[in-house]
Length: 268
Image 1 (cartoon, one colour):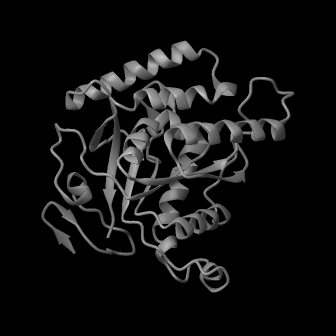
Image 2 (cartoon, rainbow, N blue to C red):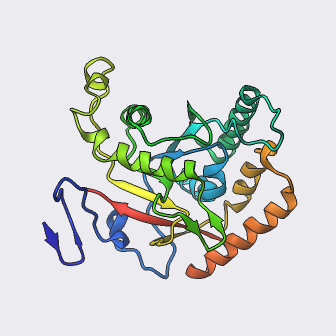
């Protein structure tokens, strides 16, 4: 049913969203730092390092405040090297080690790797089942992933196909599959994983952010986490400079030294 300022409930088989500014229980002043945070957050990304580039400072801030968080990497980044002779299995092992180290710095309780092919990730039923299993096992109240609607970012970057596929797969796993008893019924019947409803999405690298998180106190954690991905860094000092400038630019939106932005979607 439509209501002024937003919609609630299921409409025509689609999830309906509330006013994004009202997420986390209270209307958020668009000029103020976002005050909400989930109690349990599941971050779903395509590759090791994706979450650290996107939202490591936000996650570090929320975890400091009491959020319990877990990360899911759909691939192990086995195509992330400049030398075509690189052993993809050895690279995958290395990148998993790097991501675990980075996740420990941020404060995640763990990282799962789904071992889908890097560079060929597909939003198919097999991946959706894996993600539904992760959601029903961890039972988050929020899922964070890249905004799958973004193809060109800031007129200077093409969003990697794996990023888009991971975002789409995360959304499709959240709704309707994770909450639908008839979606992958063997998960409930054979594995004891009952349906679970995720009521909030936080999308990063979005064209249409609705919330800005003050990360002034945790930006150094993000930089440390990114440095853990040594196999992916050609010029660490230049990257650090860019991250600081980027956070400062986003922080101007809420008059803070550093911030990260999110598109907030609340689902009934």
